[in-house]
Image (cartoon, rainbow, N blue to C red; front, side, top):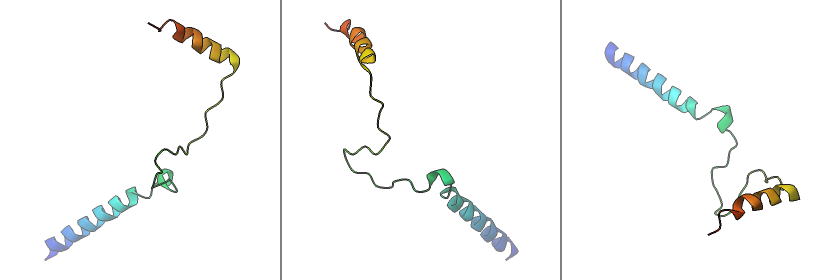
Length: 64
């Protein structure tokens, strides 16, 4: 019976450790459901005219 008690205690400790893994602070208050086609992140920074021109020049050589 003592062996069964030890096994039960170790299983309880393992269960508590597994439950505690889901309680990390960086995982709190994150969205659990997502809407298709809806981006909820930070908006991208707008490019200025100089950056847009530089991108156009880089991609101009890729046209066939």
